[in-house]
Image (tube, rainbow, N blue to C red):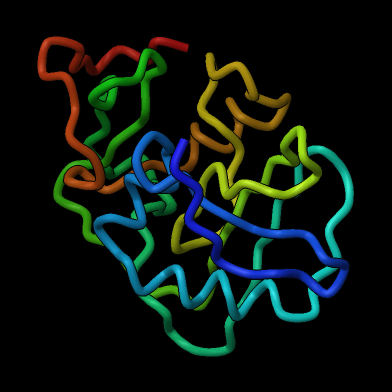
Length: 165
């Protein structure tokens, strides 16, 4: 595994990302400036636990979020993103919106350091229903939120209007 060190925390943990094989690496390859935002968030942050979820308001617009609130007027469809087995919810004809927030998911590794497992611009959101990390809040959250249509490439054969969860 290729480890790209992003930061050292005040409590001497390394924070790194696998730029090749991780979900975070895929996102960062499309928006590399986010690495500097993660560095900024890590300054003064103390980490503990095996899984750490951080949502930070940066106090300024840092990019666009693909997660939007939906209403009954939205045209919704479901599909599996490329290389994923869980369905995501999408809204047609909607666009990303400016956001001050960054969300970061860190997982503690066997050496005691933290890997950035996932990151995105926008508020913290639970995994989609059906994901192994789905929570009791997943279904209710994603019934009122969606990704903008072009947020991810999808497997076209999986597109459906029928909610799969």
